[in-house]
Amino acid sequence: MKKIFLKSIIPVLGIVFFYACSKKNIPNATNNFRGVDSVSVFYVDSAAALEETVVKEEIEEKSLDIDSVLQANVNIEDELQSDSIYNVVGFSGDYPLFNGQVVAFGKLEKNGNIFAFVSPNIDTFTEDYTQIDFYKLQDKKWKYLNSEKVDNIVRFESIDLNNDGVFEVQSIGHYNMNGNCYNYFFAYNKLEDKVYNGGGFFSSIYEFKPKQSRIEVVYEGSWYMPNIKTIYYWKKDKLIPYKEVEVGLKIADMKHEARYIKYSENVNLDKDSVQLIYKKNYRGKKMEKFFEVFFQNN
Image (cartoon, rainbow, N blue to C red; front, side):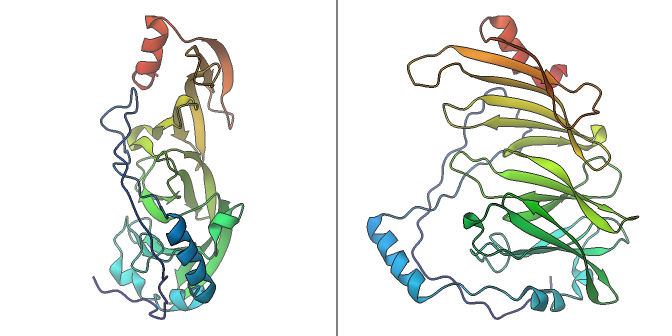
């Protein structure tokens, strides 16, 4: 594939060590879920940290001129398929910048428009949010559409959430030490010529079911965090929670094992959140089975 990019990039200097964490055993998750087989974690010992600090003071990674990147890719249409998102800048791009900048290009439907998805932020770890700017290619020029905010982002992907032939955009954030990350979903509105943020969730274990416009999400955090299963539907370009079950420790002090179970629902799909139906002690085969087969039975 021919690639057209801006070439003036100064790489980061420094010593970074990585280690891989084996896949977590997520209780009750089916084999069809998209999981994280390994998690890359930045690790530096005290000596390396001191060296990195010195290097950072002397040389800082140069940020890209986003306008120049966009201009260098006005012919990107020749490189894209009808369902493709091509990340060119960022952790997963051809130029793996670590300063928070991300640039991707995509075509969301056959014979449709070409879009650019841009995170121009620098040092996203020190900010409360990351901005995403959306552009549309018209007559070899990039037209700015609008901006949205997410917690953080590493790359973009495309997914047809409701099986209508028009793909939505998924932003994926940094994985934390437990393998969880922020996922947000965006849809283009032709009438308003705008890209809308349809909401998201914090997890890396989920299964898309486009024929049902449904997403099944499993969240598992640290030992003291609850296990949560949530069913979402993609409705009118928005992620709507349908039903949710949560199991957690009553007292998270490493001395007590008693757990609770909470069940919530939004049966009519007319609200932005689920409402608590009950909270009980989590014990007995009936409660255990309810959690285990939650997705199958709802």
